[in-house]
Length: 287
Image 1 (tube, rainbow, N blue to C red):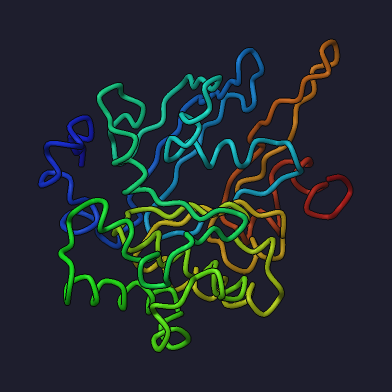
Image 2 (cartoon, rainbow, N blue to C red):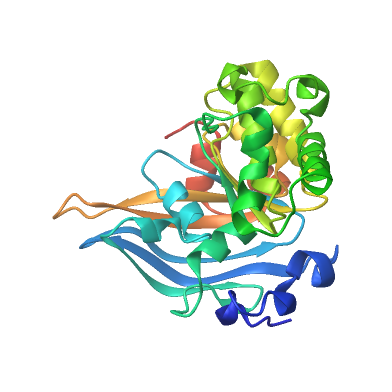
């Protein structure tokens, strides 16, 4: 499968990836080869090679400053929003070059949604938060069609029963855990292929965290999920694959560059890693 992603704006009929072509086999969604991300002359991550497969949860773990979030943001071109950012190497999405100059970054972010560390609902109603993306895209009509989409998205985010009687209320009046699930509902309302999550539970209490983790395991039936987490227990609980990142320090300049140490099935990474650096981090000897 090699969709013409370079014509994203004009050939969406050829690109109905998650409706017509996505299946439940473990096909590759992303192929990353020798990826480097620079901010001006500073290299944030170096020589990253990684594959991400459909309908799996892949967790990125590692100490602070090792480039986990920079790597995550590369998958939907969020680093493009930083003027000093530059990327070298290859990152393909379903066989197509994600960084081809003809690719529309806005369309990329519709297909590859993102949920941030701190819940960030819009200062709008619960209903309007979920409807915002489809309304901007113009692919869903107002009225019953939009009502059904909002309801379906909130149900997928395990939030419908809690908010169905106050959809016109401000999203800012919700609890932190509810706001994060609303942000997940907002992300999936645009019918993405992939959902990126940058420490989605770090600001939440244990009960809310448990709900988000349960939700992730349900959502992977329909979506591919990548998550950055500092919580190793969380990675062990929810992910299928785990990638361990670490930091390489240049002695002369004291600059710190993120590197990928290893990636593999989560059970193996936590019980029998191949690299001693991974074992040291998992067992708390550093980090």
